[in-house]
Length: 583
Image (cartoon, rainbow, N blue to C red; front, side, top):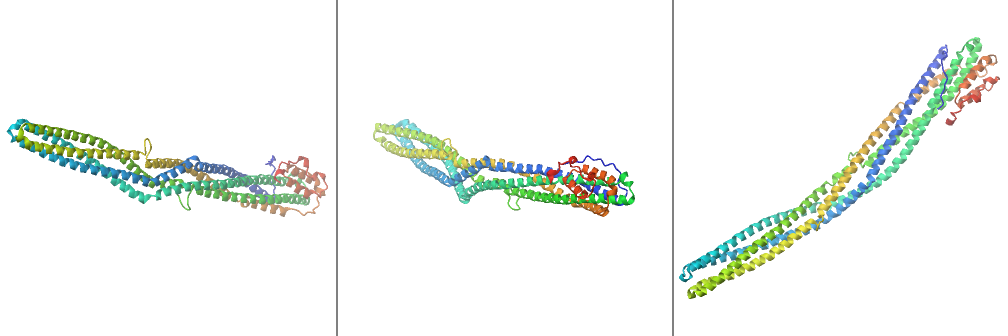
């Protein structure tokens, strides 16, 4: 902007009318220096605020459309597929547990058989002991031998009781796990496929949200360009303040020149004609200034109002980009994070069931090994009893007819020992089935050698997805908080600027009143000036040298065109033309 280097130290006009004009022009000039500078500062701050707001929205777009949310979307889809496969996995696991329970029931039947056989063996052992006591030829040897048989059978009973207790504990664990599987099955029926379908829907919602962010970003970019263009236009239009201030100073210069001693020395009638011409020239300059001022001020007001509307629209886009519904306060990503809680609860329960099934399977396999050792001990006992019964038969044959009753008992003892052997073999077969089923149960719970179970996979995918969503949500909400703060500051600054933008009331009225007063003091256009040209010409030359605007020289030339004195014309060579860029 061009600036004036004039010093205004001349005394003010003495007349009341001239003093009133000077006062109004000085009030307008002072208001311009304050108000235009303030509005310019506000608009400059608005530029910075808009850049910060757009930057925050861009960061938010990058965060939502980045790889983290894409990975979370894929993981939600994977978790959904895994959850849908859980019912089949639960069914297979329950069947294996049911098979283990059935094997346990079969083992219980074998135990009852063996207990019955041991009871018979004990009876026969006691009979041998009693019968041998009545046979003199048998001697004490048979009694001792019969006691050894009874002790061996009693040892077998103790081992069988331990077997039964261990099997009972295993059965309790198996039936508890089976009951939990039933409860999980019912829960799956309640939550599936609703939960995985919801996860799939949320994954689709993220993709749709990303697409919406792309559209919003384009809208924000368009609004940002418009806002910057309007701010640029408003800042350019503020040049009218400096232009108007300079032209007011030139009018003030003309009023000061009227108070010069040369003018005061003229006769009253001549002085009035000269003052009337200068006032008419100054009124014309001020009227032209006022017309430009009103035009550009109106343009500034329109631009500031449009900028405020655009800033408000960007704030609305911010809420849409955050994923808020109308009147809602919950962000899109935070709502998504909360919605997977139900899926977490389900997969955590199923994962706990997998771990329990693995533990039960391992415990069953270990129990099968321990039970097999106990059965082996019973089989050893059975072999000892058979050997004792055979020895008894041989001894009975040596003592003749009196040993026949003992021989019959020994034969019965050997036969029931064979029955015990058959039951023990069946028990071992059942234990082998138990061990195989238990290993299969543990392997399925583990998901295969070195692999993660289905529920554990779904849980890991969900947790990773939620961690990604939470991290992105924190970053996005931070950017949105910045956008909200910066956007609010932009709107507040624009509102303050608009509220203080009453240039017409603060400046225009003073200019209008000054122009009216000058017009009233102006003389007629045909007033004779030839006798005052010696004083008027220097005044007009001083004014012409002060002009910095092309329009000022044009107005000056138009009003002085009828004067004969060449000195009255504006010297173009001395004019400063740097303001022509504005017109």
